[in-house]
Image 1 (cartoon, rainbow, N blue to C red):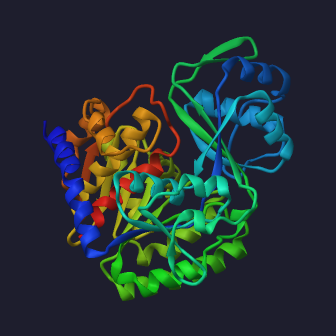
Image 2: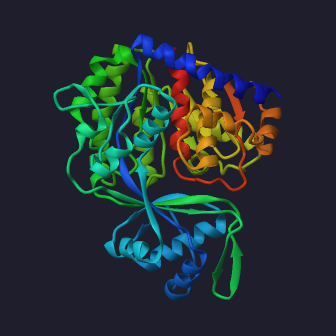
Length: 440
């Protein structure tokens, strides 16, 4: 029962961690993007009708695809359904958006790794500063919490509602699908093998990273008060020239932050990239400054293929080889991989940080969101302790070495849910949970 005891101990430690960071004036910092998620209410009958009307070729999906028509939407979603996959893709046509809103019921929600992480941390009482890109009233209302501060153009810390821009929100459509649901393609009924989600971005704002100079300046000048810096949002930049300049500029910013406060934990959370070249540019450019390069299991699979080693899921030697090759290619201090079954840290120790506790807290927050469909308060986290530990994660943990090729290895099995209430925002919430352990 070691992991059950670990979860209980980590949960019990949260109030003391909050008190310590409040007394010491420490905060987490999160940047840089936000949007208004449009949650699509899944209806298998409606989708099967769309398949009959619009599917004009074999289901398929590859990196770099875009949704230029309703036919593209149906083709890509069929492929993901049949293979139990999730992903992210750009919508280029307003027709696709209108068709989704017309055919399915939709619900607005908060979107963006930074924004969702901020909301999750605030729910348990962790003080933080955040820089968001979509400052529409709809988005800022989700972040109206005393624990969340933002940096005004004058460099003052203010609440989210003081940052409202008056502009219309940027929409990302989110399609969640459940294991066991059936769809009809042609004359055959198919059963979805794994619960997952597809993110569809109708978004020109984030084709450049809208990093706020006032926020960047504040983080540099107050770096000693920043316990951790969680960065994300580079994946929507399409232009190689814009991305190259962005990486150069932001790399200098991270260098200054680490110079001013070497103990600030710099954490990059990965995402689906529209091209492998873009992902390589970001990872290679930022790795020298990163304490943690984080990703989900699907992203590790993509990276391992790029390194010439197709990862065999559930096979320990293959997993360790993939981690080794990715860490060699992008030598951040360590890698974090999170999945529905486990969370793993692979790399060198971070002085003063209990990485096993960080993984556990990440699993606890993400497991709670999966269980109840919203960000969890302390009392909600306690309810998640009754969910079983993943058998797959436990099996890996039993045979995982404590070290591999000179790197430390930590694993914490996830709280497993066969049919989660939510499948979106789980990675963002996991990353938020890890930040709680970074307050030294």
